[in-house]
Image (cartoon, rainbow, N blue to C red; front, side, top):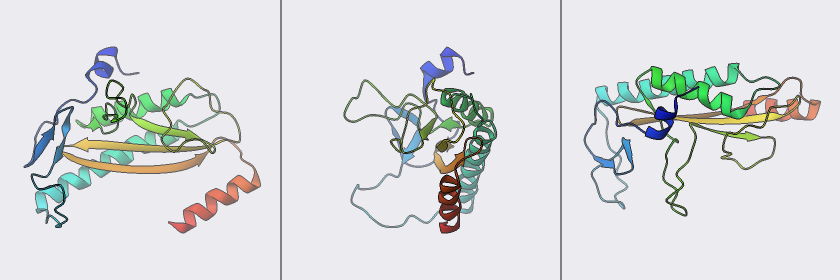
Length: 176
């Protein structure tokens, strides 16, 4: 489990910033130095593409670690701690942790992952509720590495699920 100090720090600045503006509340995220309504595609260098791939790779490792821990009795808070540990151990920062809340600025997003059980809200906050047999869990994870973000999500069964739930998971995988 991450220390209270790492939680309090929320988002640490990335080790190396590329060109752009550093978001004032999220040190690790850079926004291209351009006008908000400029829709031009920014061509990335080979180095930038390599960093983007590494952000995605680290994010995939964090997501895989969280998914491998999914079982009956585990809490989504425990899965969150696993993902955060993997991200930080690779020199990256959780992208969602500390993300500003425009409606409630004093309450930024408090977790590394989004965890939604069954038909819940898509960006559920991890907590102390224990996973139960037959549930479907969606986990979304984001990682900032050297100013670039990797983000992906997965939906998995908790233990054995109903035939209907298994079919839903199968059809969803096929749609990808």
